[in-house]
Image 1 (cartoon, helix red, strand yellow):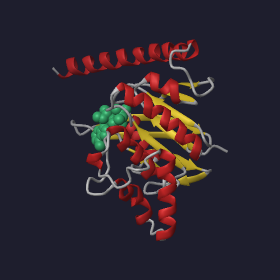
Image 2 (image 1 turned 45 degrees about the horizontal axis):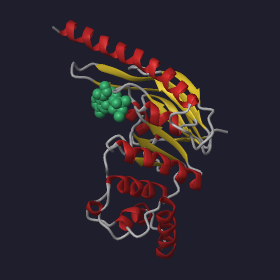
Image 3 (image 1 turned 60 degrees about the vertical axis):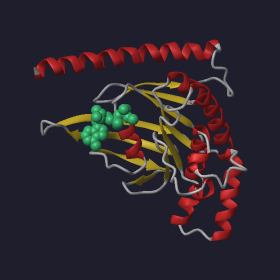
Length: 265
Ligand SMILES: Nc1ncnc2c1ncn2[C@@H]1O[C@H](COP(=O)(O)OP(=O)(O)O)[C@@H](O)[C@H]1O
Ligand SMILES: [Mg+2]
């Protein structure tokens, strides 16, 4: 039984001409318990839309989402979400930020402290608990957000281009940390990235999405033992395969945009 099943999801948004633009077109996939799935696709293809649907923040027009074989509907709280933009509360310390979800869930204070201490140790933020967000680095902020999502033991963790605003060195470090933390917690993760190297380094499976209306173009099972060596021939082979497919999709997107522009002038 898959941990997460996404079945035939379609979604349109209203556009400027009081019509509709179809973004997702019949998306289906499964994620197994403890797997890290990376969603890769051209910009604007609906990756964030799909994550929001999985997390119950947005209702699909068509299709269903199952967690542990149970259908979930918008408003459920079984998914932890790491947003693209940093989203720590600036007026709360690291510890107070991490505690937030447990406060909402009215968890007993003693248990709350035990769980917060445990996750602080897991993500490696000991000694920084009482700092405010402006007193920690960008990488530490991302780890705090990871802890804040994981402390409530969500069934699934989704992350939306979580490392895209960081310098290359911090990004590489966080990818390694993310995998280390996942190994400790056994989390099932859906990770959106437009960075193919990141996907090949981290993923158990990669799903390539097409341009809008987005479908799943191809699924890759990344059969390379972790920890991986970014520059190994195996990693580079996946990388070049995925990049060439992505390039075709990006060229299609550009020509679609040109056609649209010339039709409107
Ligand atoms: N709330 C919205 N209303 C109208 N259009 C939207 C809305 N959110 C996203 N879109 C459009 O849907 C498409 C997919 O957006 P998004 O899911 O953010 O893509 P991605 O994350 O892959 O870049 C884009 O063309 C975007 O402009
Ligand atoms: Mg996005």
